[in-house]
Length: 393
Ligand code: ADP
Image (spheres, rainbow, N blue to C red):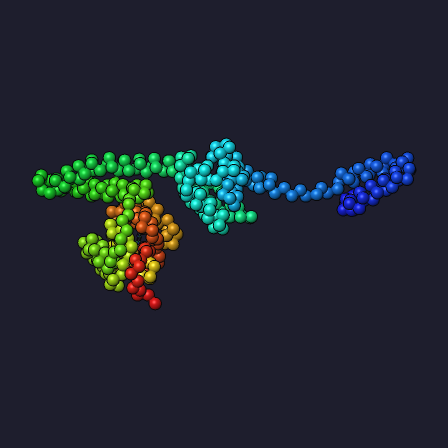
């Protein structure tokens, strides 16, 4: 059987030719039904020619995608769309139109133009005509066309905003009663009223926890504002050295308490493009941690260095360091390596999350390297045009 099927084309042709020949020569009766049957069977098993139907294949691929997707021709008009894209744009609103016409998004139209020019674009953007927030990926494909894939983020963004608003409102509401309790505790401790030893220790405890609650509500408020993009940075060219000295002064009292030596190592005239208030908060948070997580008698250094394009500020400590498995998550909110110890040290677990957001809001990057001899938290920001004074090789 295998042999027959492997040679089915010559057999089919031979059977057909023989039948036709016999008929042509008037030998119809000689064409046996068996030969006719064999000819039919072999014809049926002939391989069908492959139909070049790339159009349907493309459509099937688009329909198989879980997200809205379509193909854009070189003139910028949408030529194909899958079911989800039709549902997103509205039936009959897409084919033959440009994405600017269909969505009124200048940003998306720009991404399409770039993709048609050969660049792959991935942007989070708003589609004003549809009141949607989407992540649009546009990539060049064959024959100067572009493939658009869209992920609808509207619901996700809405629930993130609800969560953020809740946290911000709750923190805001907590501030007034916490301030009142704190004020009362401080009055009791300031000596106006006689307290026995037990009462004093309780009031001190109330005061300590009030301070923590105040920091926590303030950090939560800051973080909500940062996440909502409500923290507007004012970028300007800043002298790095005086900025570092100021940040060091703000944490000096805490360092002295813990017998930690502080030092600044920054070249003169180094300038960074940053928001003064934001950068100061970043440095104070990093220095605070370095002091908190170093043993008494340790050393904390604030080091600045730069190239023509970037300035790197590092806070280096001689603490116990952080295990590699924690490093990836350390900038997440409420992530702590040793929560008991961190809480005891007065931390909120939000300091590094705030650092990350503040640095990103200034267009910079943040990172950490850590080993047994201590940690180095670094911040990379843009240098100003005249900011190039490098100490490096
Ligand atoms: P916290 O308020 O607890 O300090 P952060 O977000 O600032 O919160 O830091 C998160 C955690 O990262 C800390 O609880 C601590 O475990 C770890 N950490 C941060 N900085 C250092 C450091 N310099 N050395 C060791 N561990 C650190």
